[in-house]
Length: 385
Image (cartoon, rainbow, N blue to C red; front, top):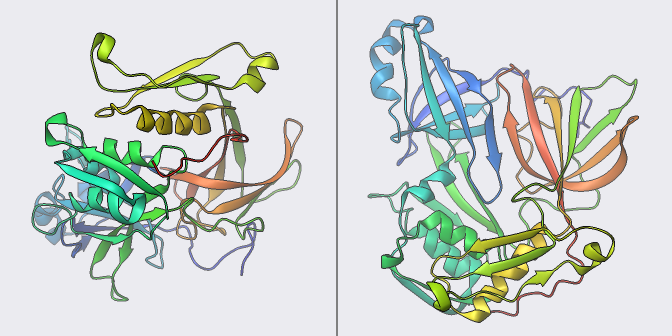
């Protein structure tokens, strides 16, 4: 198998853009789209981007058909390499034109559809968080009649939970899924878009969960990103961020439930005492949990917050070539990747995880986002509650 830095024949950097029906997945046509804003993907949430369509570059049939073919919230734009391997896909949310012969289509990935639907009544008592609860949440938007025709890959996690959802709470499905997955001992999820056959006549949309992690997690990954000062390679640049801003890190976290005044429930605060003792001032973060009133459930949420916020988040982004191993078509969100960096500013040789990526408007370039979330040493696992 080719190593990163060696030429891989899987792609010459050329991208192809297909338009498929969102609900059925049936291929409509290929169009000469261009990426006008970077196309992003992330675990456990949605990504975004933008395309532009130079109308003067269309053939006669496409000039007549494009306005009916590329309709916001009715189609899916699928980005492939020159071997038709899917690298990204997104739903147009609008289209804009002006005096120039170019039409713009802002897009979001399929996960955003969960934010356009409300969660109805559903109750679970000691049911598996992935195979039962998360799957039911996805099924509420995934039918073939009024939904987007999802398929499901939700193996049991072995973690049982109690949950009660009510229609009058006006909670969106995405919010419910993120609340469920972000607690301690939670899970990861995404929606993958795949070809259904070798003829590339239709795509399917698969809601997937992974417990405790998605992707191929290993101490000896095949994906390697290398930057060594003075040595040319396919990675032309990288950025390393230790994120301690609002929403990135804290030393005290607290979950807040539904209610007013004295009736509003709060979890007990959880404190990163080790870092405060080492000199950090207190940084606080509270999160409201819609529909949550039980103390045990709030405690589960606050432990998940501690896992996310304690220690901050270290993120490295690389500027890499689509034509080199690995390309966006080679990786799955959650995969392990080795970082070998040796520069004047940073020396690191560790295994982190690919938590997202973006495909650049610059032809042939992409940016894998590789993260190490702050340590969780000493946190207790949620005991099936």
